[in-house]
Image 1 (cartoon, each protein chain N blue to C red):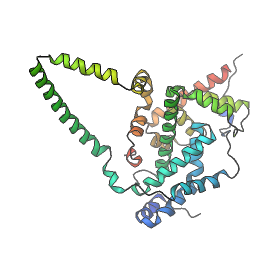
Image 2: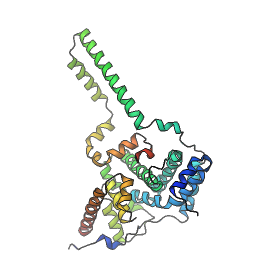
Image 3: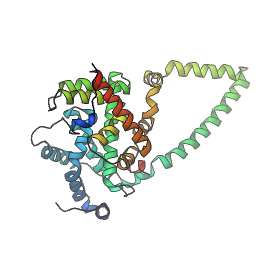
Image 4: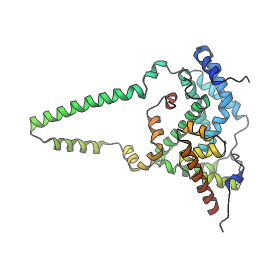
Length: 182
Length: 132
């Protein structure tokens, strides 16, 4: 697959007949990364599948309005994050749960998730991660599993690098404490 | 007995997996869903926070002035104090408030970190503009 820079893609987007080509290119390039990002937030494969599709539909609908003020991957990650949080919010409303307590629903997803290959220690780690508040959990996942730079996470979540570093430190300590207790 | 655990030792790998050939299926599913969709018309760009917020503020001020004028006139005509009318309006609002809002108010702690996202989602914000 040819590689295009954001600038080149932006030029193509200005020509309406190339929008489908750009969209196809974006799917090929980002679908896996976006899926995994969402999957770590929602745990369940079925939920992640739905939200990934919704994310790309949003990308498609808004592609002609993308002005290149941010990098494409930042823009798509941001949509994916918002779609995931929106999904959790809808679930919260449905079950009358506090967003902080959505973790109980996600924990039950983790227990029943058939597409989980981890060992017992990894399941415990996931359980501990699920105790974090959603936004902190997302930031932790992006740093810990995806090894993203704080600057990238900061662009996507709109949180300062300093706050992210502090958050990661606190999250890591909290998770380690929980793992010690179990 | 507590033991020292360093999460860095877990190897950073995600324990989740997907069904076989999932990503080729995903691509095809996305294409199926988008083939009958149109791009959002560009004129919708003008209906964003930057244009709606000032218009909404102006409309609110206009409504407030009209509302106050009406209440003052009513009070003059009926010899009812403005405080009584305000109380009646507040009672009416409390009786008719949606439970969902009350629930959200009770769980105010949510908004410490979700208010920005909730605001953006509730207002169907153009994602490109969030970056600005």
